[in-house]
Image 1 (tube, one colour):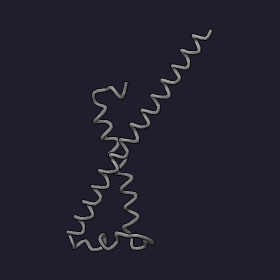
Image 2: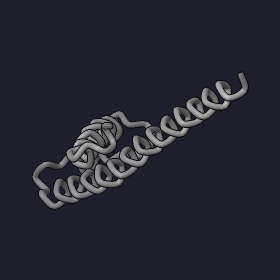
Image 3: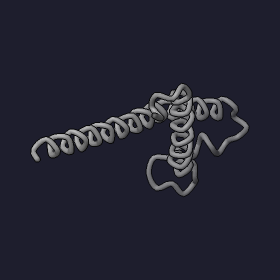
Image 4: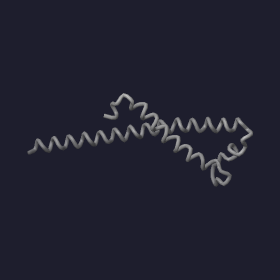
Length: 101
């Protein structure tokens, strides 16, 4: 029923975007610290007076969110498809089991 609901596409997009934003913010926040031990955006984050660096970081983050949103949407739909297939298989097995008696 949910998949057929008129508002489902928008609900899916908003849910996926919310999940993606949290994931990307958590992932990139670790890269903006002066104590980062591996790859770091720290020089970009450290100089707030350089607006172009902040703009570049925001554009980069926005693109990560866009890509991750699509990834989350596909994962949700794949899970829904898998669940639907399992349900259909169970119904088929029950019908076949009833016919054998």
